[in-house]
Length: 345
Image (cartoon, rainbow, N blue to C red; front, side, top):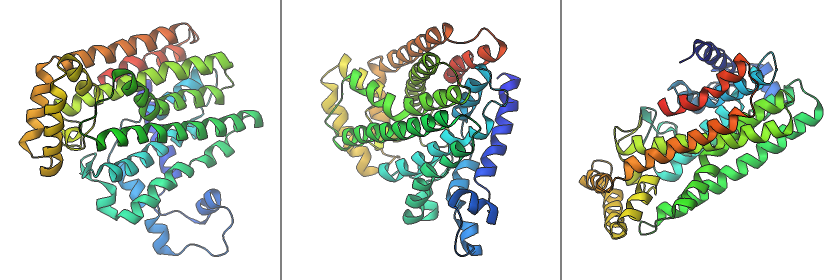
């Protein structure tokens, strides 16, 4: 990892703490909620941010806020729009809380899912709050009013697109017998996962007043990279297991990941067999022998290697897009180097 990444990540953690303090004071409540008729009671100060802090403190890769800051720096913004860096990361953590509720997941980042640790009602409220809380950062950013309006419009668009992608994913995993085609899967990933990478790149570029063509190219390139990141995530789930989660929990949740789709393309009769294994895994839980059996059958088709090639191809396309759009400066190179960094996770 570049030492510059490490330094920036430490600064980003500081920005996250300023947006999500453990015990918010009156100034924080005024900043994010405006003037209140009565000061919040102590129990509310202790509990409002607790679910989000629980999740954020467990770790996370933080490459999205890093991307935002690198994009702003690459296009000449001296402060790297650092104050804006929590925008996408905080929204991302909100999606994780809600996603775990929708999937019935029991673990996240090595601990119990937030709805199990803090209660369903608290988790729903916390997850939704994280979509709206960081909007204040746009209002506080020192940019022309037109750029501020553009940031708000892009944020709203990307959050709506994210929920469209989630709707597709939910529809597919409810029906164990349905396997989407490869194109539909990639479109879903672009909406559900790639969109936040696109958002981070666009926000950084807009904050730096970059040309519209550069904003679009960065967004497109990192959307591809975000899809590749999701495919690598799918592969980890079926091989070593994602950090902090159970190996094969995508099977339990009925996820139609790219390896599943490619396996069924290679051997169409497998779709029915996997549907039965997915249903059994859902009924028996993550320790079901159906999980290992499903993974074995997917692997036998060569689908894992094919999915890895697909992900690397997307990263190559992203790198090629960026090559013509980024300034030939140290800051531009740092941003370009974030693409292969995503493969190494």
